[in-house]
Length: 81
Length: 170
Image 1: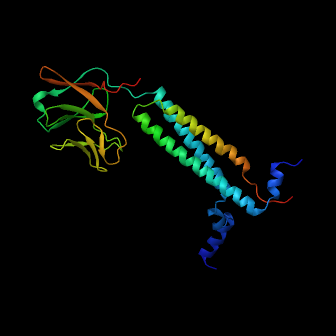
Image 2: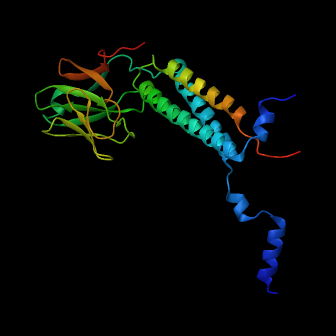
């Protein structure tokens, strides 16, 4: 059976290189947004503004889930059987 | 062969990993590490929200005596703590005759703030933060939030404080 993984394993190393770089770029972007969200929610919690905390947590959770499922596309390397 | 050489050889046999291999991080591992960091930040956000909802900051309850009216001269200040708490507060007798009470902890990194007589500015010496003595708002510097304040009121010749009614969140 041929699936996404089979074709990825056969892909040109240049292509895998691009996939990996893009993946890391998106992950860094996600982490940056999460740092901002955490900083903002901490400041608002200390200032007794609670209404932003739950949306910030949900946004952070979604970003983490995106990053986590993103790892599925992590190339396994060009190994041969 | 010297003793050092022998030691060196045995040491390398025990840890047969080249320095280059030990320090090199593959991009694959880096991506996984970023995801771990992302999870950590998500958990952190969750903890902040949980803390705010489950263990809210306690408001100052009731009225508390600070000192006599004539004990604080114009432009003078007096530090005090409320019984049962360790949070330091500062009572300021402003030049316009008003009394104000604020938490003495800078909202940046909790350094002790002090009032600069004659300027109307509460100053934090650690990172040059400035607060407006009339409102507690940030004027300059790194503090992200206004100083928490207490309401000051008088009974006969005594100064009392109670929780500020200006901002009520529940």
